[in-house]
Image (cartoon, rainbow, N blue to C red; front, side, top):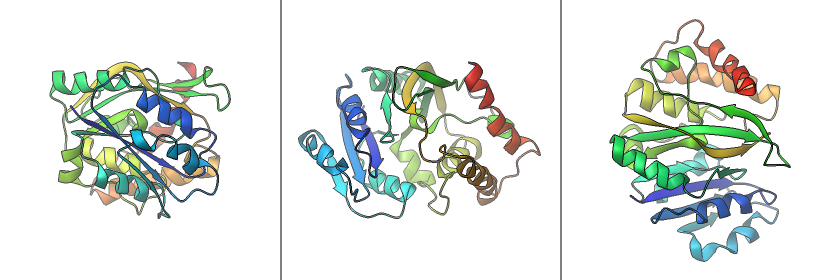
Length: 248
């Protein structure tokens, strides 16, 4: 099973090398790695260039935002499965993609997801929060459930059938995509009860209260865009569920 990993970056010189190495060190035998840079003005591109021979593609040019860049990466992907790994995230173990591939094959899944931990920005050994996804139950989105997007792996033909990221949304396009393909179109998904990705705190959409507020407003738009109606408590339960990530 061929897995395409896409990393989108902009001025990520402080973190991107760890991201790159975590992908290139995977023990899964068939991985293509695509890096889409938004014309960084720091040394991000120079760092990526060191690994160019091991990349399927390194593209550096202006874009229209995070999700536009991800869509660009998906358009170049040729793998059976597509993974999105942000430039301040990294895979938890060298066998992460092997576990993902095995789950796809054993469960006949169209998407696979696992757990994620947030780590300190400077000390990545220090876990700040744990996002325990749990097994999906039909209707879970109505009760505020969603899997962590960096630990969410999708068959490429799912994008072909149901579309890519909605670029009219700046903060919640990942939520809208998962709502669309899991809740609305009911694709087959499987859960790996293991930490697959480590994410630094302070990333896009999680950096301040205003970003969280805007993301929550766009969550409501995601339901409207898909012609769906949430419960009165759906959009309240989604951010409240994150409180338990600190307790865990």
